[in-house]
Length: 393
Ligand code: FEO
Image (cartoon, rainbow, N blue to C red; front, side):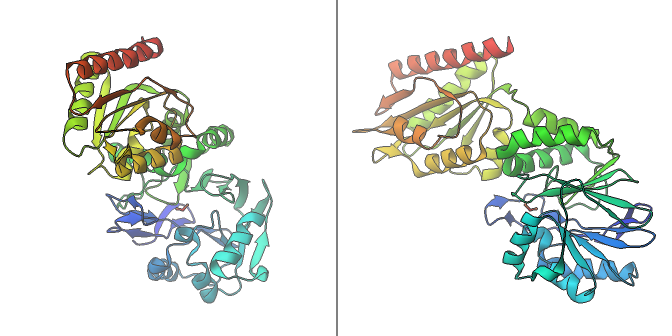
């Protein structure tokens, strides 16, 4: 994408990756993504904030050429992951006088990942500022959104927060600013679920810091720039809070139909009790769909047949993902059908050690579900509804 001005002497110079299908060889990207980089021209010095995936270097290079840069003084690295740092060596070949400005942790990781020497760096500390003349950059260390070295850069005069991954969205768009708010909200939520949800407590803490900055714009490293920052700050306050919503996610997989019948029955029993519920067939549901369901759900139900005697591998994969993402769900239900023996409950709960949940007594059917099974599923729906009523009235 072309270089575009976001404020006087502040430019977006990154690249869209319109057709990328997966991130980290794992996360599906329904709308591609972008690798945002920003150029800040002060009266005396010029700084590039982050770079792009190496395969998009040509676009960043062309944008820097278009801006007729005579020299580049600083390359600010907010985060060492290669989608933002990977083109630093190319930028340094183009501007050998530039120093890479980052914190000690990030410096160490960059030296490992990009095989860089220590002389390339100018190390900064938390809250330190760097003058570009009439513009000043302040660095705010923000570990664990998303790696231990992550930091924000705050352009004080323009009140722009360059937040790197935090507040991002995997969304390739021609919009420089977040204009299609429904689409941006959904993709930012998906991004939060997959990348930031395990660090929700840090998110809460950093939003408190950001609230003191009187930010006028948030320029992230993925997706459009927020020129109305309250839109994304309010969304993040909601997602990262301890509060859940009156909804249940049912993750099910079935081999011969019995567990699917049980899952479908439970879904309808919950609907009759005015609970928002959505089933996810683990044969088809992707990681993004599962992750986004975890942001709001109060109760998670795993429905699996016994595969030999343990849970189906797809159910274990889903449970592992849930455990890894550490959602704020309060309750877990387990249902399923088995033939000659089962260790469904022990093995599934064994995959969820990071969750602080009450496991509601499970419903397990030997063979096909029978009248008694459906009565037990009604009881389970009522147990879930009782807990939801206590929370939501
Ligand atoms: Fe967009 Fe953690 O990198």
